[in-house]
Length: 505
Image (cartoon, rainbow, N blue to C red; front, side, top):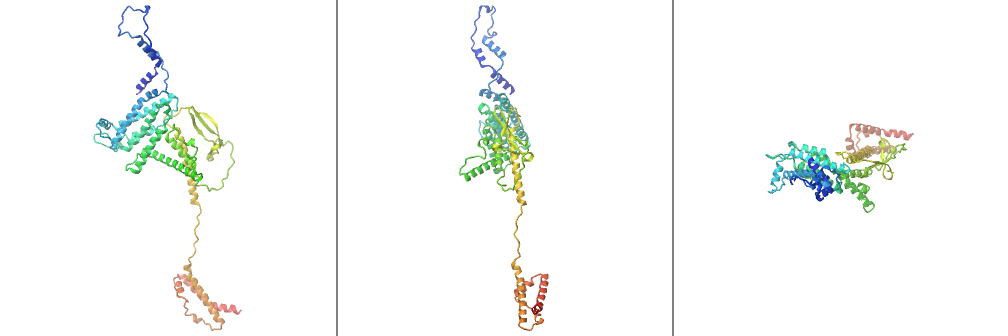
């Protein structure tokens, strides 16, 4: 492959004007001074045009090619495009065979037999080499153009680990007799998707104006991956490959959070204003994905913005007074904007506060005073923009759960009112009736004494309660209550004597 690239590069470096001059130069006539006495063989003596052409090739210095030309960019990517297309053909045929959907046609019989005899480990190694070659050519082309070398993020280490794991026969689910074993059809599909995205981006790099349009292919492949993930998760009996489980789950959560924030924002505007004036939950121009941005980065940024929009403010509006300390000196860090030859690289907000109380300014308070120029040099295998947005999203999630934990703790610690327990009136009614009857009997004895009737203690020997309901209720009490009631009854019998003494005085 390297020899083919060098050969094509050498041919493209030849000046076209020199070739035209060499091929179109007229034959110079012989003069008197150039006559030759010895005849030369026409097969051994080269013509002046060919001699001049050979001298031009040997003595001409190569000029820099025009990398803006689509022809040059196509020729530079032809070898890697061939290897990527071959890898896609092999894996697509393998997917059709493992899913038992390969068409039974005589024309495709040779292709099916060739792919079926291809060893899985050799196929994984060939795919890995094709991916590495495509990434190297892409980095070389962007370096020669002076563009950002980090424009095509590809998780090479994760993809290599995926190929390494499923190249072993121990992880294969389809095993045929006298043929190499194959992984499960869902595993083959997850291997094809990153390869398809890289091939599409590599093809778009042929045209210079399309070389940075990564949003559409990355979004297309990511949506297909999410549809496949949820279909396997909810409607299939087989399990989804564990290596791609967490990324798909993470993107699903981000999509849910983003769409939920958009729906709540639109619903709030309809209820409050009657119309949707702002379709997104922030600055429209800032949050919309750009064509030169990867889908995962755009989704991560929008998910972070949706978390910052709510910030659990609706659940914690009822707060106590907050004592604000006067700001100290040298606590404000002004914002910075980094510029490169392709535009704005990143923007850092103005920070105010110290330590844990450090907060970012927003709105008109976010004043940017520092301007810094950055170079285009970057890591070839690390997407710094994705990690920067991931850190912002992680901070937003941490703040969300921290405020939710504080709210839950305050709710659990709050005092709760319990209803007062009153004694049941039905249980005390018989005892009250009994005491009332005793008071009536005492008053009757006093009235008989006033009338001059003779009173004797013997007539109380055979005492019976006034009502059977009172006696039955009193008998159901405990032994302790019976003793107390009997003592009270004896005291009540002696009451008339005390009353007589009190009246006589």
